[in-house]
Structures are given as structure tokens and as C-alpha cells.
Image: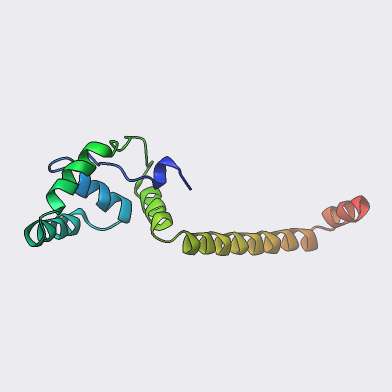
Length: 124
């Protein structure tokens, strides 16, 4: 699952310094304010957070501007990154529901249209 939508980027659009915290927020789906506050707590409690921030700022690529079409697509990819199995289950469930509804429509039109029923029987 190495898509450009499942990669961690620096988010320069919403950046305060280098965009690392906003990139982490975009990647995880957590509000950027909480990520920044957690970073500040780490900076004041440990000494290694600040160098890691600058290293990440140098190593991470900038987020492409065309990454998401809209807010709904962004939320979808965040859920994929958070829990891919759950997302796959949700998609399968939606597809089963669509298949069931399509079968209902098909049954309705076949049973209420004798000409279509005869044509389907003729093809069998």
C-alpha cells in the first residue's frame, strides 16, 4: 500500500514552521492544534524532539497540491491509513448493500415486465 495518498508529507499549506506537525495531523486525521501541543510537551519534557522535528522537516517531501479532490476524499484516506482492515470491511459492506439493492431493482423490473421476462427466458 505505497500510494502517494498513504505517504507522510510536510503540509506547507497549513504550516507554522516547516509543516511537519500539520503533515502528521493530515496523515493521522488528528487536529493540527493537538499535534502541535503534543510536540511542545515533548520538546519541554525531552530534549530529542526538536532535532527530530528538523530532521523530519528535511527528509519529508512537500505534500502535493492535487493529493485530495475534496474533504470527503481526505477523510477516506485518513481512515485507510488509520485502519485499512476496517475500511475494507466498510467498502465490502457498502458493495453488498448496493448489490442487494440492484437485485431488488432487477427483480422489480423483471416481475412487472412480462416482455422482459420472456426475453430473459429466451436467452437462457
